[in-house]
Amino acid sequence: MDIIYIERLGAVSLKNGMVIVECVSTGANGEERVSGELLIPASVFGAVASGLQNAGKQLSVEVEKAQNAQKQIN
Image 1: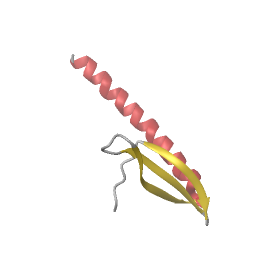
Image 2: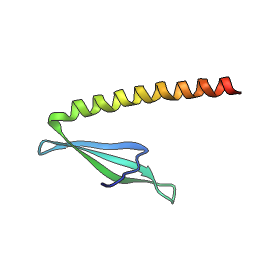
Image 3: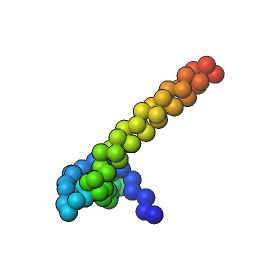
Image 4: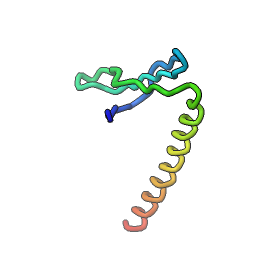
């Protein structure tokens, strides 16, 4: 399995039933570069996008809990 570092999403296209999403990160020289591509079957793209959105919401809740716990310690 390859690991792709992503700071933002780049171009998105649809070809041969696949959604292709460019992954962009900042290189050592400070310039943005394409760090990889996500290939998602178009038939499941909605479910994948929804899953990522739900994961983001869950992480936000966890971060808020951790911040509140840290405030109580201090």
